[in-house]
Image (cartoon, rainbow, N blue to C red; front, side, top):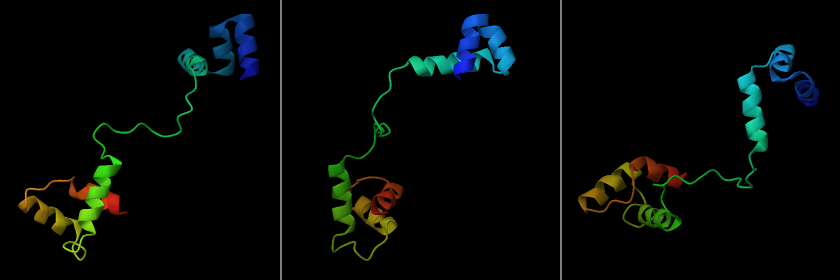
Length: 98
């Protein structure tokens, strides 16, 4: 890429992009990414509706309780709804268990 930048400085962006067969839009996007400050955040952002660690622990305690230890998350979910208790969706229960 260094030879590309030196050529673009000497001849301009359009001739350099044509010589290297690179679109000017790609070149500009590359420059924008290079100029943005790098974040040291290695984790992906947390979804706004994600369960907190305390909520996940509550789900695990319910699923591992004596009442539900031999039941599937489907059965536990239906039983909890009958008792007017909602922690999360069935699929989230499975993700927490895995």
